[in-house]
Image (tube, rainbow, N blue to C red):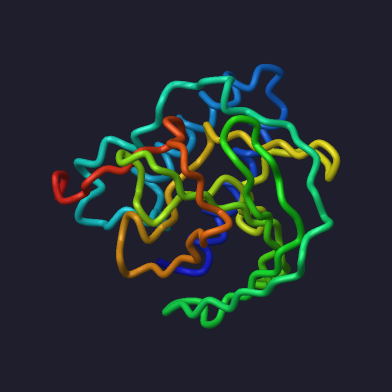
Amino acid sequence: MTAFEVLDWRRRTTELYRAVRAAEDPADGHALWVAGREDLLRHHQASPVPMGTRAGYPGADVVAYDPAFRFVVAVDTDVEPERREIPTGTDGIVTMDRVGRVALDGLGALDLWWLGSYGGGLFLPVRDGDPSTYGGGRYVLDTIKGADLGGEPDALVIDLNFAFQPSCAYDEAWACPLPGPTNTLDRPVPVGERYRDLTEYS
């Protein structure tokens, strides 16, 4: 892929999330997101789905929207500072600084991170006990790359229906920062994107 293909992917992702935030009904925004991601994953030159798999790939397996997994929460910024330095094969050392913590009623709490790559951005990964999801975890927010559901520090939107697989779930050639212990929930999160074995479509 070329630099301009990656640029176009990020522009389209940013526009897709802008449409999600503008939707009056979160379920309508979710439907836009599902359709938009399917198109990107199946057809875009910068898709993490391997080229030899795309012709038969049906798109992401995303569970129907469940409003019980949408949270609008205050970020607790009174947390002990912590920095993680994650070596990756493609982006060098990725630094993550803990900037807060969010409590999700009935599920547990997750750390919110600031990614030091590029211009920086909020990052919220999650790993849960649902065996149908990618074992390495999923992302809910990754604002560097446009995945931003909106809100403010006192009312941040954390909607687990939008949990999506990182690129390394599609192709091992990618290296991704994955959730640590403080971003792992004991309970399953049965919404968002489920794992597909891409060898079935190659």
